[in-house]
Structure formats: structure tokens, C-alpha cells
Image (cartoon, rainbow, N blue to C red; front, side, top):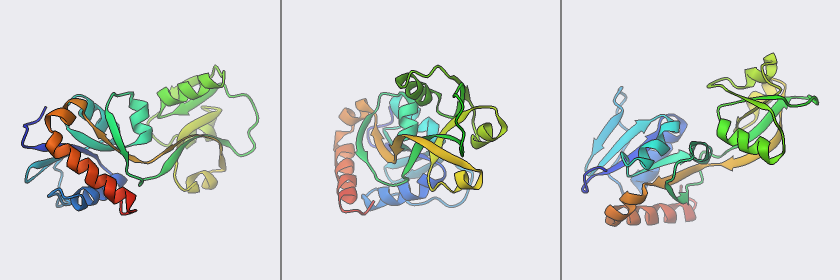
Length: 209
């Protein structure tokens, strides 16, 4: 656990980072977008931001290296980590979907995904005994090249699917950015974390997130 006087927050790189820092600033934390550099840890007055891969945020929060963090619901569920999730921040919306080539009607015997845990649960719920292949990028290619009969991947606008003659067959879950908090930190740093959660809750309720 970090020092009681310092709040350490795990924030993912990429499309969520700028929005998350802006939201935390409007919630009253003395943070701002850091100058362009290769630094991964940013210190402010009483707050440290850790700039992480999306998939690592639940790990850092669950193990107490970070007191709280912001992460997509899809990544949080895939991680299986036991963190407190007090708030849907209602940005970075997308959906996790089962995707196939347009018109594909054959049996699904192999599915490729960056989300093997969620994919397995989805297939088991439907009694499908398909093999799951874990990939790390350009998942759509697995369906286009015959590596898999279907893929499970995030869809935001659907533009990539249309450009590659693919279609969503089923929506597995809706996702958006979530605030997550370490359960021990919530007790030890209650005076810092509780007001932050309430200020964020107010911003979300006002549609200002």
C-alpha cells in the first residue's frame, strides 16, 4: 500500500488516458496531462498517476500498488480481479461481441479472442464446445483467414467490421470506463477516496463525465 498521504491512481494509456485525467482534475485532484515524455509515473501534489496498459490496471489496484484506477468493464471482467467497483463513469463505451464473416452459417468449432475468460463463459452458457485461441491483436484477421470460425472482440463504431465484410452475430456485454478501488485502501484512505468517489458520482449524474 502506498503512503497514507499520497493517493496512487492507475490510469490506462491510450484513448481513456486523456479523458480520465481531465475527469479526475474536474473532480478536484491536482492533476493534469503530463508533458510528452516516456515517463510512466507522474507525481503531483499528493497524487501519483501510474500510466499502464489497460489489462494491468486491475492487477495494480487489486494488489494495492495503486489505491484506485480507471479501466474498461470488459478488461475488468476478463481479469477476474476482486476490486471494489463503485461507479460507471459512462465514457469509452463499446461492446464485446461475437463476430463472423457476413453470411457465415457453419458450425463454430474455434473462436479467437483477446478475452479467453469471457469467451469461455459465453460458449459454456450456450453449450458450445469450441476451441478458444488467444490472440493479442488484429483479431478480425482470424475470421478472415480461416484461423477461427468466429472471433470475440470489442466493437465501437463497427467501421472495421464493415470494411472487412464482418458482422456482429451476438453482443456479449456492453462496456464503459469504470472506477475501481482497492478494498483495503478504501478503509485506510477513506477520507481521500470517499470524497473523490462522491465528486465523480456527481459529475457523472450531471452528464459531465
